[in-house]
Length: 298
Image (cartoon, rainbow, N blue to C red; front, side):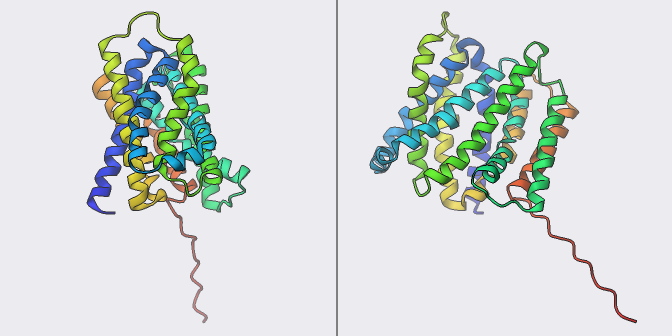
């Protein structure tokens, strides 16, 4: 990779790792539904004009139905589920759980699209899900009153990410990432609008919460997608997936530095196991088969 691509990869990981920080900062004031309506709406307001300027509007209108469905499955649903979870779990804990998304993507691809899995990938799935169990066993990132619902919501969110990765492969092959990014955020915002109107906060959120949600929409979501499709164009989708391994680093770092969160040995161990399993399951880590050297004849 070129130096610029490395910088983009690290910056994208910082932006998406920061999304957990800003969600945690704003969710108590806005609530999960209104927060995600604002996040996706702000991102759409920036990405749609960019799509039009780049000449991709026709591509979006031609494929608007599957793209907007992607917005529901890939943004509205998982963003809301993770926001709900972060009423009880820390930003660092949520970022580690998010790293399990490629595991579900590989599993769903095998069950739905009949993608073949190598023995190393099967082992990676087993290792990765063992890491999820290990992480769930650690209670430092959870508050007991909402531990089970929060953990369940976050895991459903990761399943949703895995599902949409396979749906996009099947229905939107060849469609530009910018069209998918801009259209999906618009679709998510439209889907969330009636729910947000119903669950809009009764009290005016604080200035801190407003600044967090604006940063979440403009920087973490809109700019994040722009960096992501630039990485895909420059280094390919397989290498761009490597951002998954850096997001928990920034998620935990921001949580500790800015929110005073704790990172326990159990969280760290669970995160490492999940990332090793993810690397194997997605083929980023390839284990060469052992070859037995024949003995010389005597």
